[in-house]
Length: 163
Image (cartoon, rainbow, N blue to C red; front, side):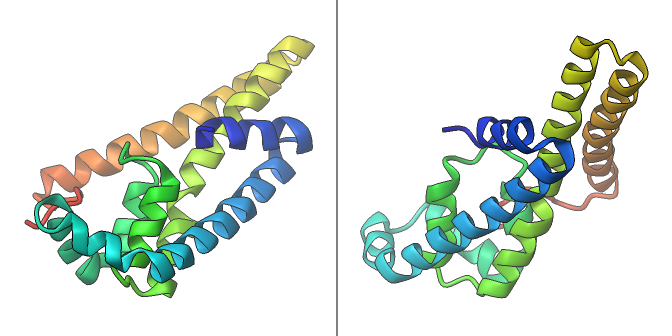
């Protein structure tokens, strides 16, 4: 199930604030579990995969586990279960991984929470709540967009690469 849908169900079931909180906690729990499964079972798989992209990703994560964990939460990289297991399999430091995951998933959760709040408020006729929630969702999106743009203009690579 896509993470956006799981977050949306949590926000719908518990409301925007508690839905966001529980979605964040659930993401941390699931990310932790799959990280340790990768740590326990994944080394043999990595040996079979060999060189190429996995090798470059491993090198980047070895130097930047916190940033890599935060970045992969906001770019289409693959199923999070596999990404989390890969972090474990390549022996990324757990606290760096968990910190990046904890911060990296917040924009996505905020975007879903504000977006669903806007839709619910509009359906209930609360136009000002709908407008505020829409502006907040747009603000979260634009904040990420302008951050990436700023980093690119400074010449700082924010992609997961060996560069």
